Image (cartoon, rainbow, N blue to C red; front, side):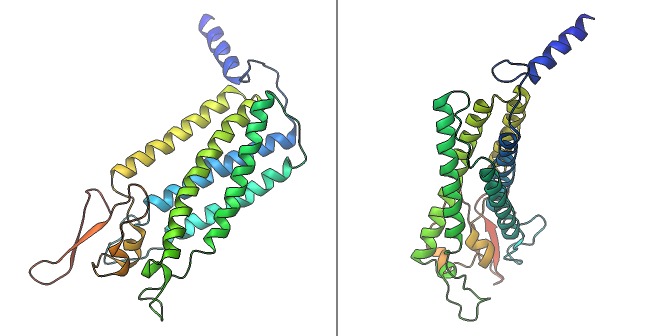
Length: 261
């Protein structure tokens, strides 16, 4: 009986809201706003970012003999587009809501962070359309912003990558504030924290394994005289393969860091 009482007490504690209130009711529109924003910015966006960063070389892909596997690109674009759609719906649900639930300061900060995330999302979508041409051997004209790594392409990559990660951090901060404003159940915060921890563990694991490979090389290979090889890879912790030429004259490629591929 004592153990049953302890379990019931623990269950009540987890089901209670962050403030300790057991009976908690939230307006339907606000509840769905929170659910959709969590789906977009705690599931779809981080998965899209991790996929684009660590899986440009697919499992069992015979790199560098097989190049430009576009599955990561389609996954990244599809997940980000879905996240944008979900975000628009979530914002529409609270468009006219001006009530400062809970702490006024916290609610106001949450609201401004949310608008900043929405604005950054619009910038990322628009900026993606201005990334320039691709070029390379598969292009009839050969020349292209990406293949030649023009100043336009360099600016795009720096802004797109940096803004993407910063927006995710801002979204997670807004999520924490939103949970506090909504006085969400304790189990919800704990579950979300465990999910975020899992994502960070995967990021650290794949980064250590050397899976963050230079996009330029995954598309065009490791030949040293390619235009983009003269520049340092853009972004933090990006690995690059080194091309070697054995005595028999056959091209051979090895990784600068173990565990890539």
